[in-house]
Length: 134
Length: 306
Image (cartoon, rainbow over all chains, first blue to last red; front, side, top):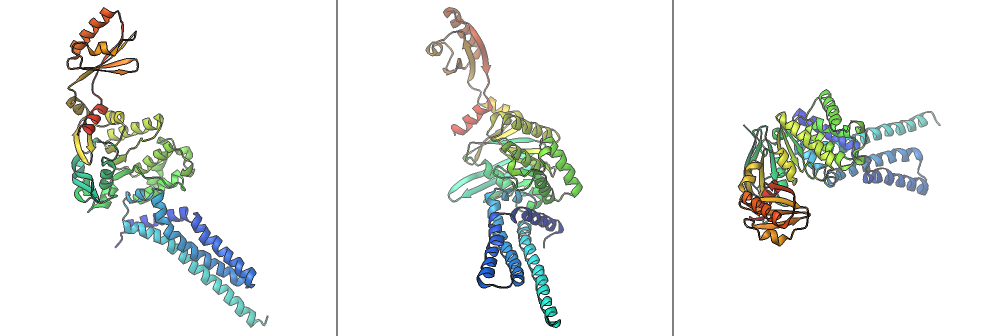
């Protein structure tokens, strides 16, 4: 069981990861550019409605950034020689891993809530449209 | 109580034994130097003591905390400057220090006031908001030392702290190391710089091929190899080296620029012979000094001969 002090150190690692890795090249490519091109492909190529595609784009962006950031962190720390600094601090290995995993879950939680919010908006708009006969 | 205890520490990489059953202790408040040629096992030893790699045999403890069994408490009282580590270059100096403060469990006010003091002391305060990627090598090294000091550790382990730095940065770091040591902080310092070890360390260990070949106070080690004295002499005219080699009581001669280094078992007798020679040849002595062995001589004697 992780102590409270180790948990707060894991949160410090997660905060550091968010500051550093969300703007890294691979994360931007997989998280922003890739979904953007898919959006354009479906919008221009198949003429899908924009309101549907926006919620879809947001979900895709969050999902791909979340999955792109986690595998990037540890190899990046190793190659940038910052991992030794982290390991030589009084932080347990589970706390380091939890900190890195929290970044992933931060994205996934954002994904869950924003998708739910958009679904709610689109779905209820549809119901309002139908009920008012428009 | 000893601050650092190393007992039979051993590390093997395949068939190669990088560190071979080494033993030493560092007393509280001591500044202990760890010297050795490249590949001798210095960094591997430091990495085992700081808990970065696991030893294959033996144990190490810091302030009574075993680095394997009680690693977190050992790390809590230790500040580390690893040779191969880096600060986070995408973060600012301030953010790096705040991160280290959080990793050592410091309160917000405490880490902010310590970070401010350290940045001012290491002449980085003006650049505190700048991303570290824009820092010079000396600035990065100074920041890393600040990161090691933010927790006000009782023990500081520094691997090559002044390696590759300019004279000003090296001098600043050496002064701060001496200041902190005077305040009771224990140091384990690895270095290639003999002058630095000579100036700072109260005791040194020389490691060669994974084994400790000498461990004592620098002056005691110098005395141990002090069997052959040397004289450094320069003249106002060119003097043939063969003439000096032929003088009575002089064992060997080395030419060093415009000077000669003369090795003799009895320096007083050698000086007398030398003065007689200069009178007979009408040559003036410009300078004459007896030279004691340096720490570099000790290092070479222990790492080449064995």
